[in-house]
Length: 255
Image (cartoon, rainbow, N blue to C red; front, top):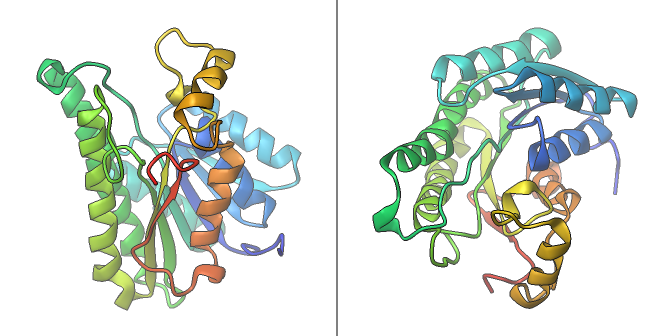
């Protein structure tokens, strides 16, 4: 596999201050992309930039809250102003709320899930498409959904699953709406990955490892690099005819 698939291109990654977003940003930079890392907290974004630069890559930190449409417009503008284009966008920012039956879910938790996981993706998509449709080269967008909701469910995660099912539906519809603009839109739906989001309250990583031996057909969580590899595939020319796909990376949990 070429390690320069994204040489000379610019990628914007939301939620890039930690976890999967950071792994995706590092992976794009390793393959030659100029990376704009976006998120609500400047400190972690600067840490991601430092990791990219230490590995010889190029990155820019841009604080942004996906709940604010103007923030996403500004993030796209920053990418274009600094690097000249926006070729790839990964809408990764998301939160988890749950653990109780849906009838007991606090209203604030429901609203937070919708505001960040659904409206946040919409705000990002609209800003990204507005730029990509204006450039001759178009672009590629990958939304991070989940295996929970679109592909499987379990008690206590109904609201989160509903939000992520909306992301998958939004992805498919947007893919058809904008392929004529030269923009390919797809989704990746991870299951449990090696991030803090897959830890249950009070659970340690070794305890999670034991739990996953019985919960996952694969017997382990996915490495963030494995999920990032799927994202890069969908964003690359290797996936030139892939439109509206939802690639599940969950060790067989939803099979």
